[in-house]
Image 1 (cartoon, protein in one colour):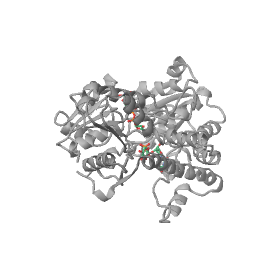
Image 2 (spheres, helix red, strand yellow):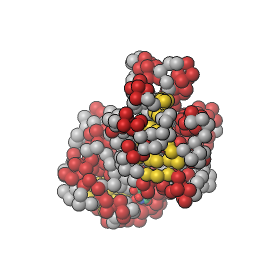
Image 3 (cartoon, protein in one colour):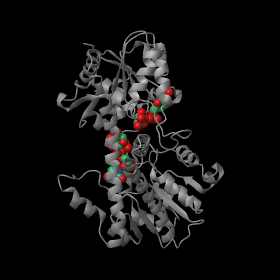
Length: 465
Ligand code: UDX
Ligand code: UDX
């Protein structure tokens, strides 16, 4: 049986970085090298001060500190790492295509293909190639084709091992996952042996009963299915939030009542200004695209509705702000507390805040943002990427400050876009005193106590109430 001694991971991002750090921590006998074409990112992973690693995840810097230089390495020398590895994880990003066939829906697989070609070119001995990135069903087939047809005659085994970690809780999710899923060619000896080799890596800290093995296609599709189901729950509760606002029901009370049904369960029923993150939208669009390509139009429409609902939720939150502020926000200062797509991460991909800000910029609002972990340049880049406002206009109308109190000073309204814990501890009375009156507060995360805020003097709108 193959015993893994040397792992390479291509892609030092939100998934590759934390996952490899945990493998290195838990498997001291395996040398783990994480490579990336982004030199700045690798330099940050190697920064002497572990607090400067490029990804913020609670508990991650301590693990990197322990394993880095021992059996965990970060490098830009992709060829060398591929050459030495027995097992190669591909963890590069697979964004939604922005051009050509499948634009706006299909996953862009160009990075995956580049990785496959590079592995094929470099590999001089047998390798196990593991898909970590979320991919459309049957991508493994394309990978295998490229590897076998352009390689040096060595044997490649392809496995699918989708990652289920959520950002902000990556370390805990990796240490105690509900399950680890490994898909492979279990009908051949070599395929089975490759699956066993990866099972043995995880078995060093995860009970075998939680390590699930399936065929490749089930594994690839399971990841898309899991994300689609999770996102669907959020869109479902968000659909209810709008009904709650009309009827006087409270969406948290509804969520609690339905979540106590053990068939439904309590998790992922928090109504919000809309889900963000790198996965949900991309993976559902992917599912929609796959369904359409098989002519399954009803299936496609069914899943697309989850995205339509999410877009609606973001837009209606922004509309609520404009409507409440007497139908005009032109020249008015609106404070944004939070920019990340959820708390405890510096990731802003698909964050609802970006879309709400864009809508308000269309209405000529002045926006002042505070987020404890997101940089000013990231915020500007997110807005510029939407392409609806010029860089000059964005820099003129959007200011980024370093405290919540500063963001709210002299503002007409404050909007909670990310549920950072520190916003709960703010001296809301002092914030209120420094704002223009009437002072409005829009809670897109159901983070704060509405009654308390009203007592302070705020006019409060909470999503779903
Ligand atoms: C991951 C998965 O790979 C993606 O499929 C999943 O759906 C979301 O999570 P993530 O780790 O979040 O992506 O992406 P990102 O933080 O963008 O990291 C990817 C890294 O790969 C980047 O640092 C990028 O520079 C690197 N990369 C990309 C390469 O090293 N080589 C390439 O050819 C392309
Ligand atoms: C998700 C999946 O949870 C994870 O298994 C997969 O590997 C990647 O995609 P992630 O995007 O990191 O993880 O975060 P998640 O905690 O799922 O949150 C996604 C978005 O949904 C966030 O914007 C969050 O605020 C929102 N959300 C989540 C809600 O609005 N309500 C909820 O009840 C839960």
